[in-house]
Amino acid sequence: MLTLPSIFAVTVLDENTGISVGAKALVTVRLFVGGQPYYGDSMGLTDESGRVVLRRDQLVGHFLEDQKASPMDLRIPLVDCDAVIEINVLGGKEFLARQAQIAAAGSWIRQDVRTVYEEAENARFQTTAVQVDLTKCNEGVADIVVRLRGRSDLADPHR
Image 1 (tube, rainbow, N blue to C red):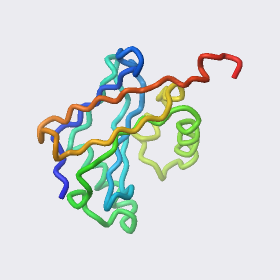
Image 2 (cartoon, rainbow, N blue to C red; image 1 turned 135 degrees about the horizontal axis):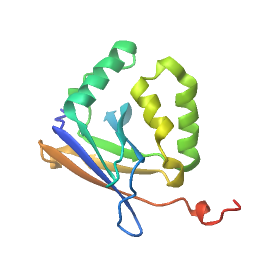
Image 3 (spheres, rainbow, N blue to C red; image 1 turned 120 degrees about the vertical axis):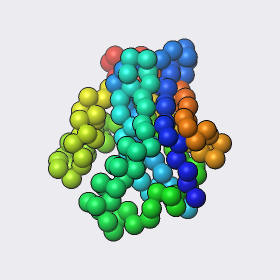
Image 4 (cartoon, helix red, strand yellow; image 1 turned 135 degrees about the vertical axis):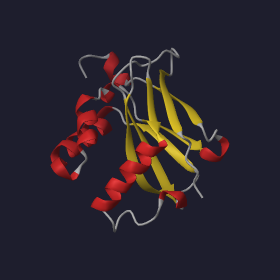
């Protein structure tokens, strides 16, 4: 049984320097059922300090909205999801491909999701995923740190 914290607070740092990656890194959360991906949502864009916050009521509200749009795909209630979740930052070509998919999907995708994908600057990073066991987190605030690597091909401007 899944117990969501009141607040997910994610800080995104550069893996090499430990310094904030700054604004406009898009962070997503993925929930699982039986170890299989079930539901994903945008947490939003990081602010200047490299932080993004998602409240439980926002996640639940997004899920319920998406469930209305896709009732056959989202039949399992959030409470029945696994306690281990994943915090993701798509990067590089993987991010660019997803960004193009979101743009092409049009009205099938929530407007808030389309907007953050348009504004995100994730192409400069390597994709990173961090698993978080919510049974080991405070029910109030889950403070999560994600450490990103820059794309190695960015060091060579001719690539």
